[in-house]
Length: 382
Image 1 (cartoon, rainbow, N blue to C red):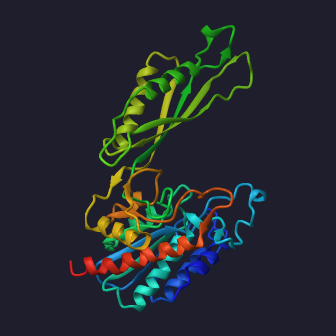
Image 2: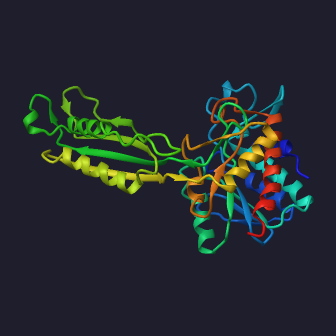
Image 3: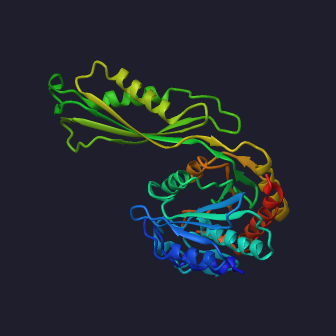
């Protein structure tokens, strides 16, 4: 058997701030090997990843998560040391307590009970990365690509991200909006402010482009999704003088979009709008789009029903099936199988004194236990 609280504390005590591993993946691997999992380390670049599987038959229920965490911020503002994993008044305090080392431990503990009870009539697997909080290029994305090439079959996946909103079990994520970032650079001609005819100011051009982009109403939403939105996140003009027309101006923006759109289509639209606004400009405009992920939805059906029922059994509430929030590694896993996100309340993730109630970690373990038990009852033999 695995004690979910002790395992969570062991993981928190490894300061695995992206891209550092600090031995966190070794702890997960050791715990799973003890249960009989076949463990495979998959290192890409400097990122440690792990794919572990118990059993060889279908169906294969996978748990996905990450051992990396964000920096602690102002360490002096914490009431406890960020990596000491102290329990104070029933709260486990530490970086990664909510996002998401406790979920890894809870699913491992639930797996131990299911294996001991002989409930695993197919396979259980873990897909754990150390690159979710970073740029996510050498983590789950590359593991999914490798598993796809090898024809590894994952039937369904649960991601342990903190999906609950206000109280435990009130929400599970069944999809996410897509995300595209774009950097727009306008290069003009630097000059003296008293002689504008000898210069080409890039700032008004950039502002007109941004206003043109900002004015678009993308849509009114999509079934299960919020409306798409564009946010300008940064404007830079590297000019410290008051009497110089700058030569360059740059802006960054992000669009969170629902399935009405694709990242490629939005990238082309940004480029076309920028080119149209700068058609008569004595300079150049470049657009560099970067798609973080496409919008996706796991349609309601037997799998989402099973997950919701497990939450109801353990927490006594019916969760909302939601697509709100940012991106997660589910955006990569969707290429392999239907995926949902089910975890703790995310209120303190990334904050000073990140913390999770011990009782809720054990409640999450109970949800996972019920999920595993029911999963093989429902999907074995299909």
